[in-house]
Amino acid sequence: MSAAPVETAAATRQINDDLLRPLLNTSWRFWALVAVLGGGVLMGFCAWLYQLYHGIGVWGIAWPVFWAFGITNFVFWIGISHAGTLISAILRLVDAGWRRPVTRCAEAITAFALMIGAVFPIIHLGRPWLAFWLFPYPSERGIWPNFRSPLAWDFFAINTYLTGSLLFLFLPMIPDFALVRDKTTGWRRRVYGVLSLGWEGTPRQWHRLESAMGIMAVAIIPVAVSVHTIVSFDFSMSPTPMWHSTMFGPYFVAGAIFSGIAALIIAMAALRKFLHLEAYLQPIHFENLGKLLLTMSLLWGYFVFAERLTTWYGNDVAEITVLNVTQRGSFAPLYWTMVVCNLVVPFTILSIGRLRTITGCVIASFGVVVGMWLERFLIIVPSLGHKFLPYSFGEYRPTPVEIMLLVATFCAMMLLYVLFAKLVPIISIWELKAGGYHAIEAARLPETPLANVNL
Amino acid sequence: MKAVYALYDDPNAALRAVNGLRAAGIADRDIAVMTADPIEGHALMAREAHTWMPWVAACGAVVGLVLAVGMLLWGELAWRLDTGGMPVVAWWPNLIIMFELTMLSAILTTVGTLFVTAGIPSRREKLYDAEIADGKILVGVKDPPDTSIASLQQALLAGGGRVKRV
Image 1 (tube, rainbow over the protein chains, first blue to last red):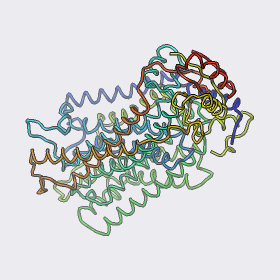
Image 2 (tube, rainbow over the protein chains, first blue to last red):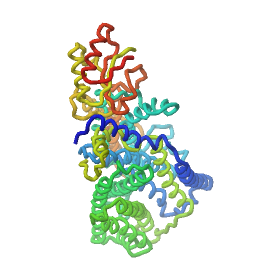
Image 3 (cartoon, rainbow over the protein chains, first blue to last red):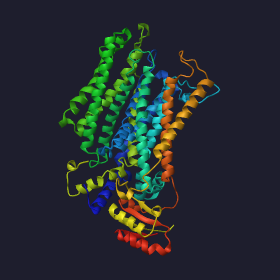
Image 4 (tube, each protein chain N blue to C red):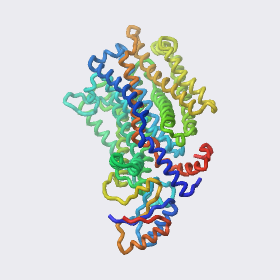
């Protein structure tokens, strides 16, 4: 489709206006939302200070269940982080045209979820001021980190992924920072002028940026896969019932992508609604992501079935004990809620084309987020509470401090996202234009329904 | 800095202006083109497309791998830890750290190469017009000889642009 230059210019201005509006106009609702979410984060911070003062005994963890909510949150948020960079990198490599409005929304999720997830091993130390003991440096104490420890692997994997993801997020923002610099005045012009690094938009700069994004997309995909594989190694390297499994790596990666897509759909729906981005985040984007979510739901179900069948067939006493306690014992309500949320709800909604609407995708995604948090919890706690000998069995009950920390993580994620959407164009403006969206917008001027435009 | 340039709505018009400047004897390296988006696949953007960046990134990856192996061997042999009967230098777990540092080095090298070859960050005085943000395409010549300004304006006007001087 081609559009006349005058129409294209008008459409370009329209895109600029639509996507810069959230940066330039601030309503009271924004401040109210920031206040509520900030309050949630503050609550979590106070709970953490309380834990620091009284010791980690204020958590419900006790022998033999020393990992519970804290590590569940860690695994869950690292999993959520797989939405962005991985999906964005894959869609960039296959040059999927519909990715353009989606990539930045997704990449931001990765950056913030990783930050939140990476905090939990430090919180879990109980004495976070000793966190530097995890860092790989030689010292007179002789505590050179043991490179054979999965926790040392975590350090390298998470930091590599965080660094790569932040750069993968930042690089395509440079031309948009230049755009904001040119369209604003005062302090905004100065701040965005610095952030734009003197970007001009010469052919050389565009070619180099696109080359760099292509190379980083290739590099970041195996890193993303490795990160959650290594998180799974935290468990599978241990001879604990139902942990010591060769399938944990791919199982965790599939689960991470699954929960990540769900988080992305929820975030996109919220952005669409509150920032009035209906023209950019269209039903087709939700439908495509909904199909991906359905695929991952089925893949997740396949992994769970394979894991359960192998355990049941092997009939090892310790493993069968864990299997039974999750399916028929005290953890059964959580287990079957997880199955309903992760498999029944997404499959029912997303396999029927008529229900694969924005609302349908969001409902399924909320189910998946809840279900995947439960899945992480059910991997960790029942196994630790039911090791090989009955005398070592134990129970776990979360305390209010842990629940407050959990709630605070969700508040922190939303707060960071809201602030990001306030400071940065949440949809990559130059990528939209490069994808011919100005032609689409121009076509929309004489009231062409967007659904008829081939993206 | 002085410059003569024009703004165009259409990449085809901008390309005509570039060709006009070439015909006026201006070398490609002296013709400035600036756009708000990459205008993928258009002849206007065809120049300077070749880059060694993938090879530089690969070299960065190799450097990262060598550094990782060096760090692991040095650390494990200097601070010998006997863990679970595993050898002091255990290659299976070492492979994980080698992989991560290889990829990290490739990523950092790529970003470094981007910054160097794209000339960012930069605070030098530039030829620029804020109308580029509205979709206009800038074609111009920086620091032209005074004697050629008239012919350059002619070439830019022939492309159908709105000529400006700074």
